[in-house]
Image (cartoon, rainbow, N blue to C red):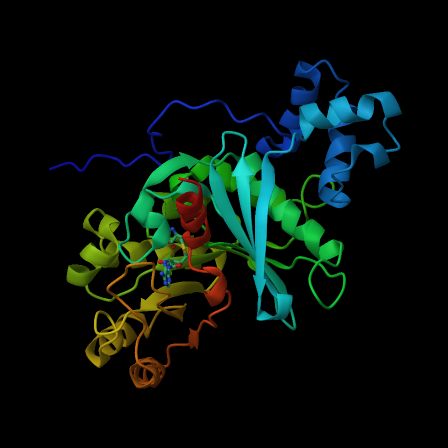
Length: 373
Ligand code: SAH
């Protein structure tokens, strides 16, 4: 029996107002064409890209290489503001900041900026909502609203880079060093916009932010067709696979797309990615008390991964409102780690940044929706 192909760009449930065009939606060559199509000289695209990606400037009045009377209108045409800050919440002495953004059609998405001693990471959204329906994830509960454009994704990253440069986090001005696609949405289900955003991150100034691909992590439920396509892009970003259990029976319920691509197929695609890029991949594993944290599962995971170039990132479950599930007991978590390590599998337990600000994926947007409904 032939299995129907799953589109990498999912059909959106409703026809919406088109997102305004932004130079971040296009390649550097297309940006010049965009400028021309708007009746501007092509070189304006390069000037504006320099202000946007190299100087992180959102104040056209400071764009001194463009005649003063044209600045605002050129900015409106090439770098329209696609995301508007609704509110920010901070915790961890200000070192973690979660921003809630409103898009041009009122849709809400969130990003989280986290400062550590050696790096600053932003966790960004690639979709409003998510169609993957994982039962422990806040975003999954509401379903997919729509894909974000490359411009909307890139705007979250540029806003984070600007916050770092402006010294908005305690500790003074710094540089954004890492980007993780671990906010709302399934990045590989919005493939083209995510790839354009990845190029905006990694292209050198002024075409992009000039951040190295190895500092970027794309996290997926395991859409094998998307992983295979990403393998061909020749970009060595870090791949993270949300496995959450080593057995198909439970994974069918925790990550429902497993019934389309099972664990064996997902790991084979991740192995091929690793072979092509030379990048060790991550296995994401949310530890859920008495659901997936038994020592036999750790043992099975250890056997599955011992000869692979993979690293396990254990995430204590952040219970979503009303969830019947909770994080594992400390001793079960420690035993899980010990067994994996006995197989020589590298393991880290993710710190729980942002817990008290609804840090789990999708929780802030869900809370805001409840407030305004
Ligand atoms: N769709 C992508 C990115 C989403 S979020 C993916 O599934 O990989 C990034 C990670 O956070 C995923 O591993 C996801 O399973 C995990 N996650 C989602 N909700 C969580 C929760 N309540 N507690 C702990 N981890 C969670």
